[in-house]
Image (tube, rainbow, N blue to C red):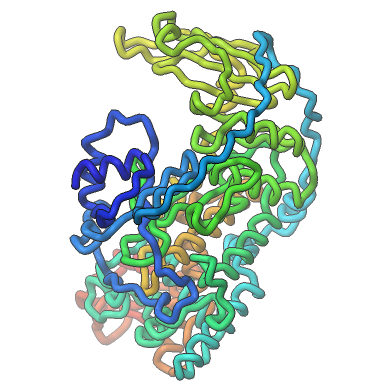
Length: 592
């Protein structure tokens, strides 16, 4: 069975009557073959019919363990293999009849010349009036977040959730105010996490969180969260694995693009949404911080603002076009989304998963610049120096050739390893010196670096920066539905984008990402709190006035009471709060 796993991983496309390999066996085989340079992905299929009756359900535990500690039922699940680099599928392991071989179409060979590139793209002169308008509005963190979760999106989620509950014979009567409380709790769970979410409402002093408990009742939150829905089950596309969340994806992409900073440089890559349940379009990546979950194609600015995203469904549901693989087709879709704002000379950066000379040619015809690392077999027989020969030369040596007809350059550069870079817009000159660490001598040395390598290293990290921001304080609460973790990812992405706009628009009074999330969570929970009962209303007013820093004076009282902070006896109190408090506890009580 181990050899079968290796065959599946290597993507040899063998057909056999053997059952699919187990995930645990595939993981072990992958660890044994670390020296293999090919990139593999394991795809765990969702329900056959994405619009089926039971696809909302997920048999995973809501409070299950996260990270690398996977339950045995997941490790022993049947898995299938897909190579994202080539776009070829090995999903079907059943014996199939042999297909007739078709005559290969002879492609005209490219003529490669040893010279620098002469690109004819226009220079970047575009301005961004939308950002200037946002600066003039001086929006708060909540206002920036609601550019994405706007009133239309909130009302849409409310209507679809009520419709879904009604289809289940439940009169939910969800309101926009209650939904914002739910969003506030999900955001808060990113930086305050309990092993069980019900601990937020417990009266125990070690776990009770008054901001959550006063905003919405526990059972009401559980009921709303269990029926949270984003599409009409009667109108789902059976050919879309993410049909349950497709309307939300469309809305968020529209809002992300509408308010995106207009920039020249963009990154395209893969992001992972962590998921350990038993259903959904789940994949496994080796070498990723999040190894198991949903793979998401992402286009971002160089600073990490998410402009466009699309969850991966594999080539069974997403057919590549233009003689490209799946990754290259996703790049084209991202470029099409960018060009809806105007046909400008955007510059896209991506890694070897996507890059090919064919893709560079298509982007050039669209008027889009592109640079990326490339695998040797995708260089269309560019006659560069052999990597073994280049390794014998001094560090910083490079070789390059340019396609005469389309001005596409391929450069092979010797750094700590030999890397191939392809571009349709940036050439070799000017060659600069850069400082690199030498492991042999334990010192830093100066090596030559071509211009396209330098620009690529500076601008390619946008998707990584977004992933880093999301991973810091990502939503921890998940439900029983297979797409609940994906909803948390969308909320985190919206908060990341709002914070990126805050950094651009409020340069004089910037706050870090944690303070930004805390502000949004607190405002949502305080301003949308349930005040229907007298007791809850009085607690809410106390919370609002305690920290306003206005009119708080310490006075003497005849009857001794317990201090509201340290709970020992005191004969002083706050005149405004009417709470007993020691003089030594007075300041801390009003700021904590």
